[in-house]
Amino acid sequence: MIKRILTTVVFAAAIPAYAADVGVSVTVGQPGFYGHIDIGDFPAPALIYPQPVVIQPVPMGVVVEPMYLRVPPGHAKHWRKHCAEYNACGRPVYFVQDSWYNNVYVPRYRERYEHEHHGDRGRDEMRGRGDDGNPGRGHGKGRGHGKGHDN
Image (cartoon, rainbow, N blue to C red):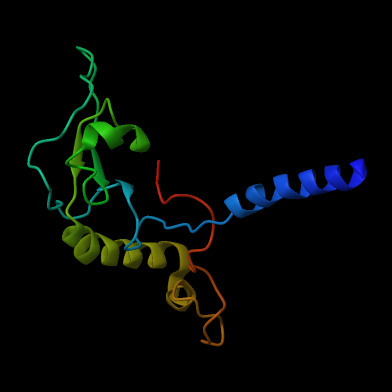
């Protein structure tokens, strides 16, 4: 009887751990991504607020580069509640507009990424197509673990 109870307890404890491992990964350059964006030589972003938002003051004499973030609706407005999720409470933050991210950043990011990392074959592979052009093979299917933050 004790063996049956122990087996049941061990089995029951394993179920939540297994279920918690289910996740979807969204990376920068995909429409559902929220997090840090490396502007680099991309066109100047359209911003939600013209001035950076800073929650914790930066110490005197310390220069901190601002960061550009795309955040879900409501996060910019209530930034004090969400800055820790992005490791950005002590940094000046510019919030990029969704339309700029989706219409300017994503297409250029994909173009650059495909060219630099995949060459000519990369375009089909990034679309989930293999050597024969059929769906279901290749890279870029967006499966994995994580919350889409690029820190």
